[in-house]
Image 1: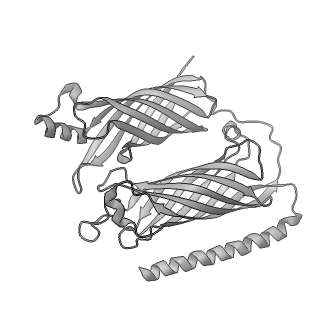
Image 2 (image 1 turned 180 degrees about the vertical axis):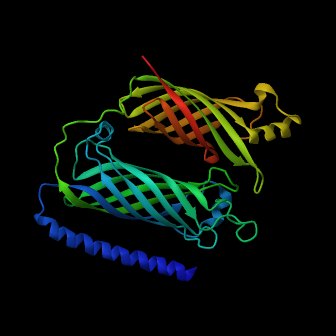
Image 3 (image 1 turned 180 degrees about the horizontal axis):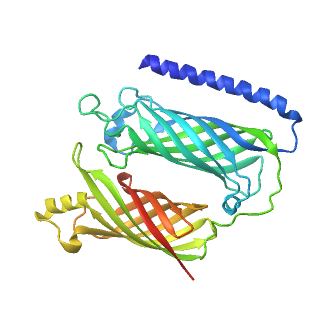
Length: 380
């Protein structure tokens, strides 16, 4: 493992040196290029931070300050679509990352590939420009829980996990092709309790990136804006149903969860939604808790849990990123926290159909991932 770590460290340093040489040589050659627009870019980023100990029983897994190495490949928006203009011409791309948790025996490394979008927070480009980054994908963690070989790792129960990353950063323009990007990053990995144990790993870090844009073609005049993603009404009602899976205990059978969600949404501009709704849950995990408390099986409406929710969604074209905060107003026993949260992504089709993927949690503890379909009704 030590040989592998040294090899990875040497390879990263070598690639970094070669990248800097490539950038500055290209900068010198590009001085005479005019009337072109940067389309594609490459951006290496280095993060250094610490693991957030959200449960005292994972403190033994912290052996040092994690380092995250990123290689981002992306494309600038051209401004020919309404959603691009509404979001100040964001950048979109793919991020390849390696997270060194500084605990090679119990946590190992996380190898990640995920799409991302980076949105400037002001409309007018300036030398120093604040931006945010949303990134959600898949990560492979080399060390997961094993009852014999790695029973100390109660944070990660499976090799494959969901990966979520939020970043607030600043774009400091050095030239037409080059900018540096310091920022603050939050990174999360977990399997949504699909396999226990699953307390998850959260890393807070400071980061520094170097963005090099690749000149590709002459500036083109945009004569038509695609506004097909514009909402038909400020008021709408949505319904979706979703299925999920979790476990009661380590190595126990997989249990199903179902949700039926109804909500009113108010569109403020085309990029913001506010949500008020009700979720009805049918959880096999909850039915076991009910039987343990009352010594008999739940019948009728007692099989359900219901919550009222408030939410906010940020919209990027047909994609929406909801954050919802709910409260269980109906349940016969309280095995989990009364506060239930949802973080997710939804795709709204032209026909009104909705594809939903979400993470349901009770405060900071994941309960299940949701995979669902729904429909949107526009109101006059």
